[in-house]
Image 1 (cartoon, rainbow, N blue to C red):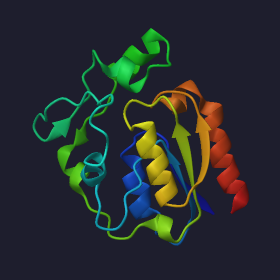
Image 2 (image 1 turned 90 degrees about the vertical axis):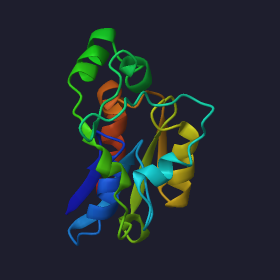
Image 3 (image 1 turned 45 degrees about the horizontal axis):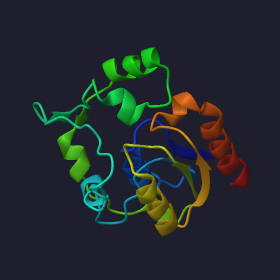
Image 4 (image 1 turned 120 degrees about the horizontal axis):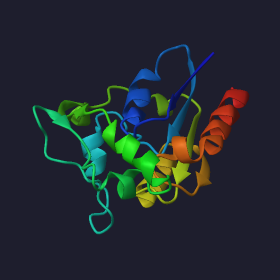
Length: 170
């Protein structure tokens, strides 16, 4: 049994949505992640987010890759971590390709696989209201926790608990 779990990047939700269609994947666990449907991309979902709230500090692309502004990273991505930990994450971030944001989903695994969603109520990268909307749309079993987008660092027990719940259920 394999459980695909997005734990490191909100964009990973798009990855498990597509890759999760594999026959060996038993369930999906979205951790404050994008959950696109067939024909949608991360860009599609970004266009639905409220513009009046906090915005991710994404810098203009450089040679086709994106980074988050290091100075704004701690508040936006890791607001519940110690300053030195947030700085480390900011300094060690891996760029992601602009093209990845536009990749449309061919088949949404959440339409046929059991799914869970960890709603992170203080996330400034994916607005909490957008998380709720995506989780409802995909019919996920939802757990909620306070914390930042770096929830896998700040509250690993909450992340492990929802993954454990999914594994035990399937």
